[in-house]
Every structure is written in structure tokens, then in C-alpha cells.
Length: 249
Image 1 (cartoon, helix red, strand yellow):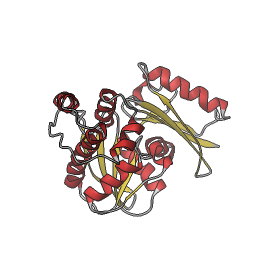
Image 2 (cartoon, one colour):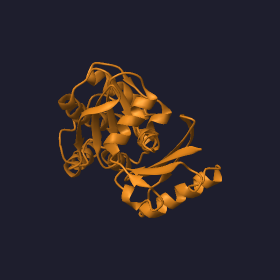
Image 3 (tube, helix red, strand yellow):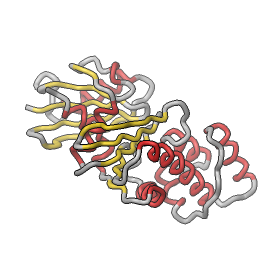
Image 4 (cartoon, helix red, strand yellow):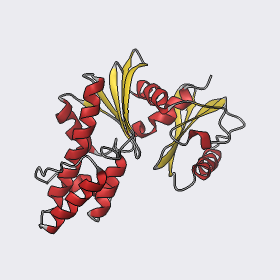
């Protein structure tokens, strides 16, 4: 028997299957316009891998679109699920950083439990959406943005609002600023905002979850700005779904 977790985010929808307390299957699909449709696509992917909803011990949904999973037995907040998922993937007390498409979360864990958390959900600055908007403005994918930023020089982008920051980027483009410098400025801007949030939660050990976990340059920049190592792994993008699967009783 197995447990299924579903995490419907604003940008991507993830699922994770735990079988005998081990991670047995993961899948990510674009959320798209309709969260219910994204949930159904995950259901099909699960069935194709041999994991049917009917044979599962239970299905827990999380994420901003958790109420849009008609086959879920229960819904749980993403704070709880990201905490449980991170505790499953990494050892010890830590502050979990999740840079999502719609919001950024900092979750302090002690003995595997959520001790304190803060969320930036009122502005897209400092989130994956901010990076997506700026990458599009530069004609790049997110991975390309991170890659060329490695060779860029520090370039201040000071606006706290995505709309105004995009105007800054347009101005920099107009001045002929090298694209790699602008990319570096965009990354630094996000890192600064994320570190400000994390600083209010506290902690000395950090873990990055979510869709940016495989972007080495962002991980390195966060570690440098926070003054401590930031652990992550490819499975960390599924932390919310893993935590949901762990929540099946």
C-alpha cells in the first residue's frame, strides 16, 4: 500500500508517492489555467505508473489549489506539508526556504515540527513569478537567466515592486547594460528579498525547496547572503507533495 500527496502550486502541480516509508514516485506538470485539470492530469500520471487513487491508503492535497483536487481525502496547508517534506529529505533543525511562483515561505523547523514561519504573499517581488517576468523581458528561460548571471557584475535593481523593477530592467536594456549584468541584478534582488524574510524567522541551517532547487547559482547566492550553507536536492521541489503524503493517517 502507498500514500499519495498532491501539491497544486500556482505554476506547477506535483505529486509524490510514499511506499513503505520510501519515496517511490514523483511527477510534475504545469498547473495551467485550471487547477482541477492539473489534478486530473496528475491522477492519470499516477495511474500510468501503477498508483491508482482507489488502491492508495489515502490522498492528501496541499498548495494554493488544494481545494481543487476532487479525489483528495483531506487538505492540509502548504506550511505544514513543506515542513514535513523537508524534515523527510534533510536531517536536523533547519529553516526551510520555498521560493514559489506566487509566494515565498520561510519555515523554521525544530525536531521536525514547524516552530515559526513567515510568508510573502502580498507582492510577487522575491518570488518565482518575479524571476519569470524578468527572464521573459530578457528573452531568456529561467535556467538561462541563472546561467548567464554567473558571469554578470553586480547591478542594482532597487524597486520593491515587480512592475517598477521591470521598468528598471527596461531602462537598463535601453542603456546597453550587458544582459548578464541585468540577470545578475535580478537574481541579487530576489536573494535580498528572500534573505530579509528568512532573517525575520531566524536560523543557521537552511534548506531550499521548490522549483528553484536545481538552480545552483541561486543556491550559492543564498548561501553567501545568509552566511551559511543551503542544502537542497532535486527531490526538494516535491517537498510539499512529500509532506502531504506523509500526512496520510
